[in-house]
Image 1 (cartoon, helix red, strand yellow):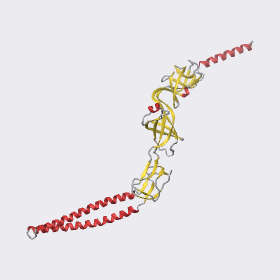
Image 2 (tube, helix red, strand yellow; image 1 turned 90 degrees about the vertical axis):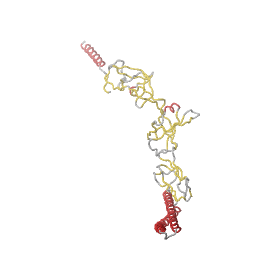
Image 3 (cartoon, rainbow, N blue to C red; image 1 turned 120 degrees about the vertical axis):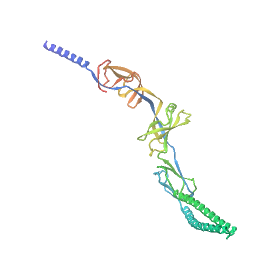
Image 4 (cartoon, rainbow, N blue to C red; image 1 turned 180 degrees about the horizontal axis):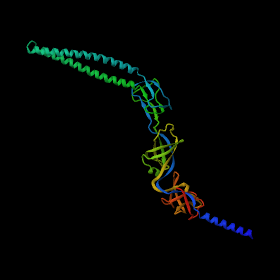
Length: 361
């Protein structure tokens, strides 16, 4: 009989202990539902295309002395690509410099002669005033001075013209080394050693490191949602690159109805290959203010999704309608309001109106 009462006592103690445990608050971790600007994104495949290749052209008419690059080479900015022969230019320069020296000496002599003619005219005018020289003789002195001054002006003009020609030849000699305007890759070499080229003839085509961009074919709603200058993230190999929308092309794919955009990288794509596929995140539809919660708060159930809301220390279970994900958060279209406290850890097994204790916000 004593054993039976002991068993009854133990059973009552267990029941009372369980009741006390059930009355305790269950610890949970929570997050707050916030309203933020959300835009649904879709991954789209784009391809690397040539944007602005640079054609290096000859600036002088000469023969090719050497070609210093080959197709596919990577070149640094200011590297010498093609050297032109300067033999003819140097010969012409020596000729002009010789003529410059001759005219400079001639001008010095003319200036000395002019000084003498000025003195002769002054004496002739004095003698003429005293009737010691005829008027014709005086006028001849004036004509002699005018002739010398005309010769001096002509020589000075020729010297100035020679200086311009020498400067142009020196510039042509400087332009005989055709250099890369920017770092990049050689797309084509259009000349060979010994070939004669004229001014403007193309020599080498270079694709600068910043001379590539992306072309993507997107849905009409994505096309309409994009703005020029808008930033878009893309995955080039293992590298995440930021692109800006450079252009929305006025072109549509008649078969799919999609449209084309061009994206410029904000950093150099040195290792990108023309035609390479790149994944980019393109926005779908306009931006909108929507309520988001942590993805950890969502509980998938047979008939959809649910979350646990904490109100006045009590758990409330709510059915929700989800929208697109935004990083580690997700849009809630219905069931949660802004500033609601949502349980993100410890929500499994909670019953409606069960007391909870927030241990971490």
